[in-house]
Image (cartoon, rainbow, N blue to C red; front, side):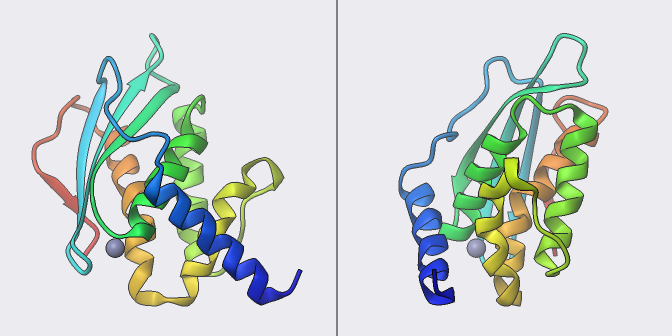
Length: 155
Ligand code: ZN
């Protein structure tokens, strides 16, 4: 497959996730809630998280919000990848995603869907769109109180 075709494929996945997200909504119950904002593009997101009874594993993540295709598709792919992960694994994935946006690494085979966002690393102004949901997830998982007040900003 040529590089151009590959790029088209990635764009298709991003557009499809934007138009038909699978993880839009709110978790039931809501164990964590965090809003995030990307002022440089205007993307806003609200994540809700359902944890397991011992609070060390993510059972479900859902997102709401408005924003560009990259921000919304990234949130949907993130929600899919994070479900079922321990908090420690989820935080490692946040770290890896940020490194991928710097062009340093990619995700292994079982998480390869996340690699469709890799192309965004070539467009520095859009990186914050792609990382918004991950940044917001990190704040949600590290929060000591269930519903922190206000937005996190990635500016
Ligand atoms: Zn955006």
